[in-house]
Length: 104
Image (cartoon, rainbow, N blue to C red; front, side):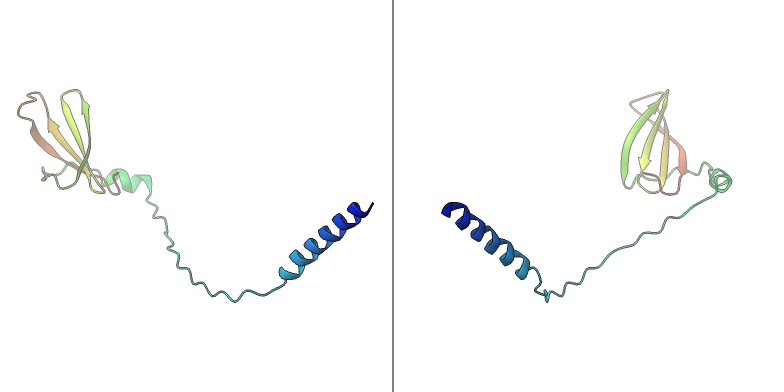
């Protein structure tokens, strides 16, 4: 009986201590900066109208390389795709550059 009373008293003190300390006001001043990105939308017709094969360009930041038949497709980050004729793998010939806005 005395043990239950001591246990209840201890639990009550613990509960009151946690409740009363929860009322203290923090004086933290934290400043956080956020970056907000806005999407840019392009109509499909406008996107398709802009797709034209340009003259070959030098590779600056090449990415993944894909093979489609005898054509090499080399990704240029954020710019487009380089096209190479790969019939002779020892000497691939540049066909042109396909600019694609936001190419990843």
